[in-house]
Image 1 (spheres, helix red, strand yellow):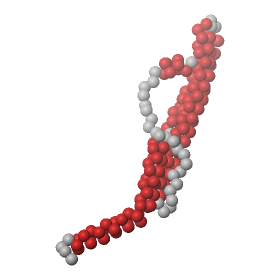
Image 2: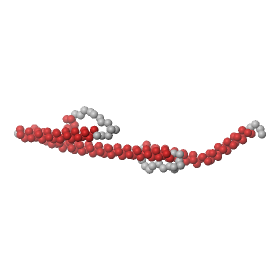
Image 3: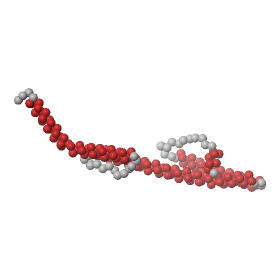
Image 4: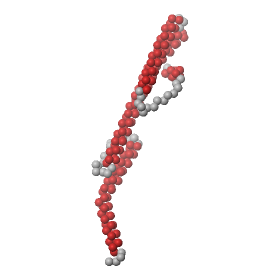
Length: 174
């Protein structure tokens, strides 16, 4: 044999082995690429807020654990969105109820003050004044209850404390 024959035989053998390996691994490689594309598509759906069917890959897939983690992440996002929506509905309901409960005493107070301003008899003025004060006490109690309930909010919620012009606030409520 010549000097180049041995390296040529070795190179040829390596080339044949590489070809065999590629032929054997090609189906697995195609499956892996297909699974990666499925995961990428699912991530895009989740990113865009489209929660749907869970991603199902073969248990033999190298990426089956990743697909399960992605499915769990999607479920967690769905639960968080549902909880946020429930919280928003409860907040709107609370605001509606509180505004209604505060408007009633304000209407009474407003009419009592009007009666005081138009009434000439001191006894009636005292009666209207007392009635208005009772309604103010009711409102004060309702506001105290509301403040107590807001302190019961979950730890994750931050309360923002700010100054409020009570006169303007009550004027808006009427």
